[in-house]
Each structure stands twice: as C-alpha cells, then as structure tokens.
Length: 98
Image (cartoon, rainbow, N blue to C red; front, side, top):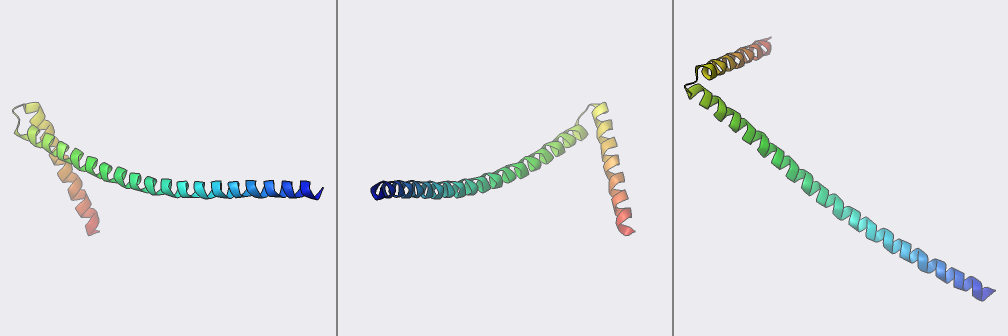
C-alpha cells in the first residue's frame, strides 16, 4: 500500500513539475508577445503619422494645382475653399481674443 502511495505521489510530483514548466514557458512566450505587440503598435503609429503627412501634402498639391489650373470651375472652387479657410481662421482668432 505504501508503495502505491509513493508511486502516486511521485507521479503527482512529476505532473506538477510539468505544469510549472509549461506555466513558465507560457509566461515567457506571453512576455515576448507583449514586446512584439508594443513594437507593432509603435510601427502602426509611425505609419499613421506618415500617412497623415502624405495626405496633407497631397491635398496641398491638389489645391495648388487647382489654383494654377486653367479650369475656371476648379479655380472658383479653390477660391471658395480658400475664402472659407480664411473665415474659419478669423473666427478662431476672434475666439482667442475673448
């Protein structure tokens, strides 16, 4: 009977060690994945910032091309847009003075 208990105890100890090893391995893998996630988040933020800058440059170029174009309708739209931007800027300045 004691031999059976020792065998069960030994088997239990072996399985506990396996579980502890597996737990440690999973903790390490989890930490590695967290580091990778942080790196990817930083890369996504950098790319989003770059995309915003490129979109702004594109819109500025498109606006400049419209102003220098020969299409009267496009020039009129650009002038209206510029007038709206100036009006919005004036409103902002007025709000800052309050």
